[in-house]
Length: 295
Image (cartoon, rainbow, N blue to C red; front, side, top):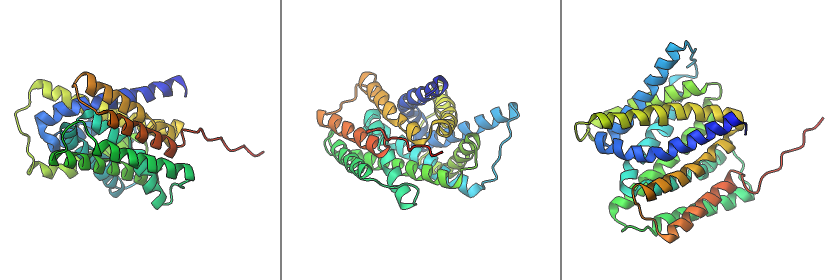
């Protein structure tokens, strides 16, 4: 990767790795629905304001249905799952499960004819899902009903993210990263807004709570998603999505050092198996040979 691409890659890794910590603060202050709804609106409107101030031309001709579909899955579904699960199962556990997104993405891509599963990918899928079973089945904390529900919510969020990514690659090929981010986050906010009736904001947020929320929305949502979609166009989806591995490492370190979250030895084994499976699915190891260029 070029220096600028490497810088963008590391920005995604650090921002998303630290975002789990901010999610805990935002959910505690705004609730797991309110944190997502406000995060979506702030991210979307921030990019709209910047686009207007810089006179950037935006093209939403792909239609509201496509943006609503990505907003309902990659944004609303994924963020609701993470916001609910992270305080229940911990940042490290949630981050490791998030690293399984490429596994679900490969399965959905195969069903839609966007991906072709090779023997290597099949092995990766087997390893990845085996790692998930080990990770969830042998935790360092008691297996309670809330813990199981939290793990299910996190995995459902991962499936939503995988579905939305495949949908975007299929139906929003002609749209730019700004349009996809603005449209999907606005749709995500509108979709989650009615659920505030059932899960209202629990307390009166303080100024520091709003600081956490705006940091989460602007730096770790608006800027990261624009960077992500831009990086996909520069180095490809496979290399870009591999950033989830680095995200997991950073989040686990933050969870262990800052929050003193426990992980059992067998869970570390499960995490390694998941990452190895994802690497095989993504074709990162063994490295694929480029096809020769015919004259």
